[in-house]
Length: 339
Image (tube, rainbow, N blue to C red; front, top):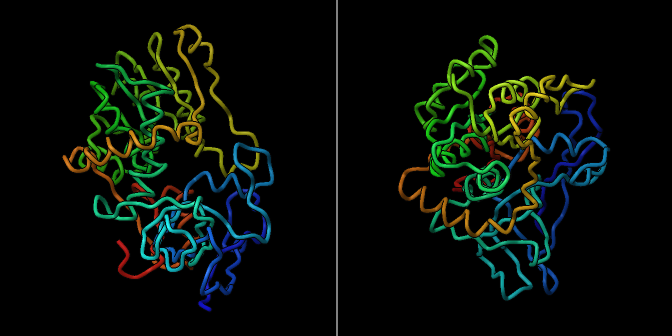
């Protein structure tokens, strides 16, 4: 039997997580699997900001991680044993049993992916839930209309870097992004096609946004909350749309984070504020994959990855995401030579 290393939740963090909150355990995996099951050797796994919320034992839209149990998350890998004719040995698949080197799964819980169209790692970024979040948000939650001015926070991250380009493809006339530091703001302009880049570490964000969009914005794609949301509301035009996608500004807070104090401005502008859970929009996946594949082939969707090597790097990778250390999607490569 091959051995597999996996990470389990050792303790629930208070504030920012520490490496001691994770436990690395070695397990044995079977050589064969029962009918209807598959054994997958994971080649890539994803770490994402929402995982911080699952480390807390609080009710949410997704169950918290269990203490002492393997962590979960998006992963891709190769089937090395199969009890299903629909998922043969050698197939590349995506699934949700990350944070481990091998996973035994029901065949119904894996999706065979086409690695001739794009590398396997892309199915956790632009062709995965990350890209779908950007697309579904700007198609359904805060739909972009021809000529709109769009503002995206955390714009150099996995979702934000795609969102700006999707907004452009949907007809936005001007796309503005915020990020932390000159390296990331330069990346917004040079790589991800933003028209203006705001460094939230350099001066008042509302003043920067007013300069970048003197006539206001039509759509705000909120990945942060707090002061970013306040700035977005302050700039929103009549009948504007605000999508509440993420809360990077509060994931590690130990006390309530101040929220926007200008909600009445949204009412005056008859703006909408609507929450976004990507799990409610999985029906758009085929449409998005077709759209994204065409954009990648045409060179109109540029993506980046921040990659760390080996299962033992996974906790530091997650902590890096929570600190904003990544540009584009943060991934953990589990197998040398994986693409």
